[in-house]
Amino acid sequence: MVARMNGMFPVYPRFMPESAQTQCYMCHEGRRSPERLPPEP
Image (cartoon, rainbow, N blue to C red):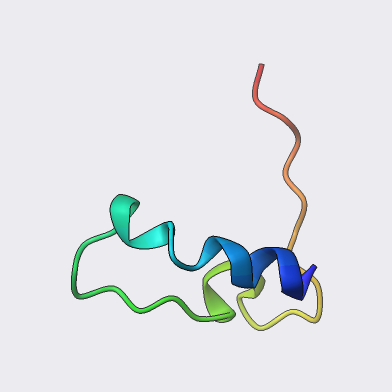
């Protein structure tokens, strides 16, 4: 999963403000694994 996420880091700035910094906490929020959300309909 880390390899996949690292490949996405260059794409994130297009969807975030310039001041944002991509960090593990953005998805994990302090947990060992990020919470999986149900797919949107």
